[in-house]
Length: 163
Image 1 (cartoon, helix red, strand yellow):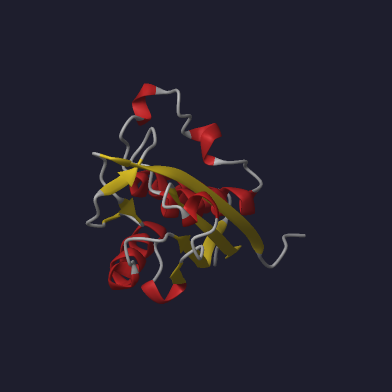
Image 2 (tube, helix red, strand yellow):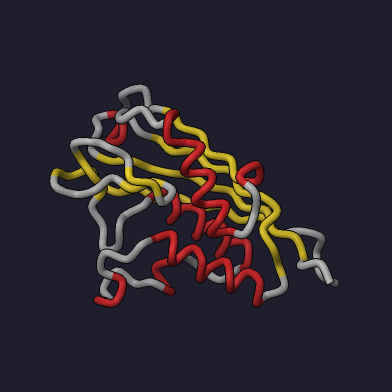
């Protein structure tokens, strides 16, 4: 029997460095620092991908888009999310909703949240109302609090594809 839903969670963190673009949820955020990573290092989109893959029981994005594979150098994470969404559909599921939290001391992300929701919603084939994006700080605690990096958490709910 197919369960009525599947839930997955995802997490990602990347180091902040100079001379890199800051991309979150597929949106370029003006800032003096950007995230270091093999692809565009979009921690928000990576967390969403891991949540979807986890809901399917398929592991994590490192298995499908390994950081030591040159074809993923500088890759647009939203493009990779579109591929993960195809796998969700191929397995007979669809996204009901995703809920996310970005943890960053700076920059302030509130003005960019609608654009992030819209970009992720398009990639997921859902409405922006089905994509929760929240931003918080780490109250200056830990590596994120010291502005050494940015982290993101995501939860995804999948339901069977309608016939």
